Image 1 (cartoon, rainbow, N blue to C red):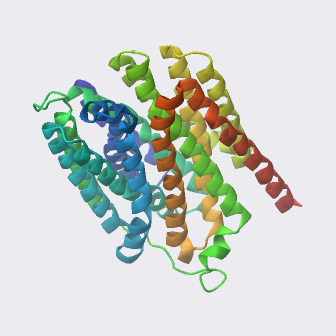
Image 2: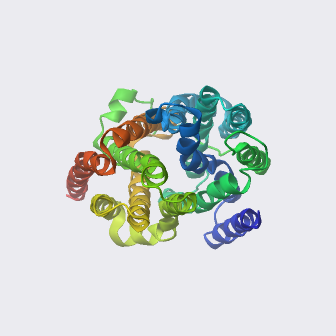
Image 3: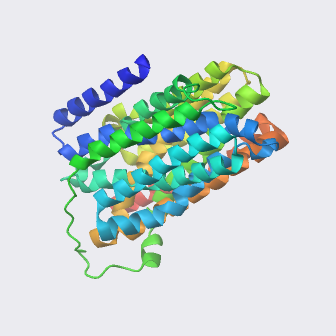
Length: 415
């Protein structure tokens, strides 16, 4: 419990220091504090979802189903989240999402107490619905930013808060595992998670609705088909989607491969997952500097090459350190690719088009991620870890192709 309190204190201190250093609006500070408290629900499901499901169901190939349903819920909730944000405002949408997460946590408590796999799966899907609204927080951060050139910096700062979620989630899972009596444990973990979700909602009470001028420089809002045909949109969505799907594909399979198939301890498995999620967000300390040095096209190239190295490391063995290094590099590569894709997306739409484009982006992104996580369990049990890694190589090569297209696009704009 002391570790959890320490992480919570560091979140507040970091939010104050970072926003003061960069002279950012108060909204960014509030988002920085609230986001990891709700984001930690995803690491909890990733960490114990497969392990708990393996106890709740007799079919081992369904062990990753709750994780897949969570991600599918993000895809399913992306369009409603954007619609509610547009009609009712960002703040109303935030509380709608947090309500879904709070309800999901309570259902997860009940499902673990009565050992009902179907209810736990539904709770995981509801976690995803709430997660769709949480993902929209990055757009709230963009809209709270006064200068367009500050967008990569603001996104980096907000993504940095995910480091705290990386450690907070698994710590909640382990610390409160036996707080409530249940056949396989973890009921107390979800109860403690519900508390942190409520705390995040309290913080967001002080969030100020961003003021956006619904005016397009080109007059009327363009049809969605016209927008998504733009090269910049295609590059943005492909970069983020492939990066996210591959990350989810390998990450989802890791706890099962490590603990269930290779017999590594739960503590070692927790350490690998914590390190991975931390690596997803910790590079955000350096990405503003990196973008100044190598620009977004350089960040895209580095992220794509790191993914290739991930495959090489994952192929080299299945000891704890092999998993650790592969997942560390996977997290860093994801950070670079997701930040690049998200930073490029606003270049494809005008202010009055933002909600429908953001919804389309998230629906595609998390739809593919859900499919990847669902396939991870099936392929892992059917062919093993090495086959799983091998099957990811074509998509890693596709990222290199996206690099070529983007570099040519940048060169044309300069000429």
